[in-house]
Length: 83
Image 1 (spheres, rainbow, N blue to C red):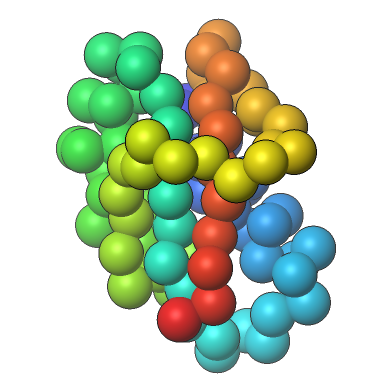
Image 2 (tube, one colour; image 1 turned 180 degrees about the horizontal axis):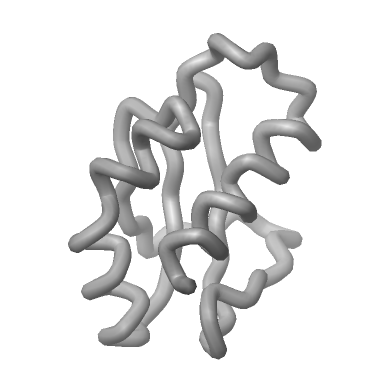
């Protein structure tokens, strides 16, 4: 479930950014939840392949005005940058 939620949110961000289907991205997230960190670590290769992300990592610096999204039962902040 968390894997699919994460992919869905990244895909939504890609759409909102008007990225072309072949555009590569870097994906970032911020969460202190152990379950989220474990799920992303376990599924990072899958998430990257599904979203055309060259990298997926955590960041302590979250962009201003970013609304958290639900990944499973946990609120997570996710954002992308075109690569």
